[in-house]
Image 1 (cartoon, rainbow, N blue to C red):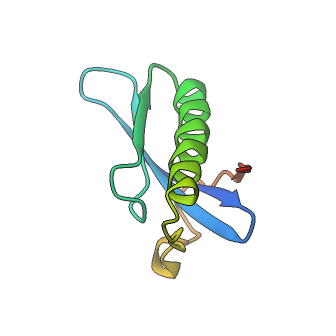
Image 2: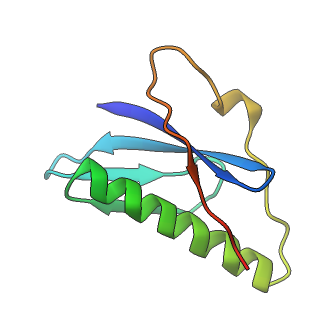
Length: 91
């Protein structure tokens, strides 16, 4: 299984790539946010973890005064991929 999940953050949209892990469970990572990744035993768990890690990643960038990158438009595609919108907010 390989699916893309669109996660929105205000005016930002991020695609989480979800893949089945060889050892079981799932891995989620954000191609536009280097190092922003997580894993979970179930699809529901990995989606919850992806939302949490995205929120934390963006919060750290903001707190450190870093620029929050925008999603690469080429990653936001429709078609045979599963797209699930999730929203996060940072204070």
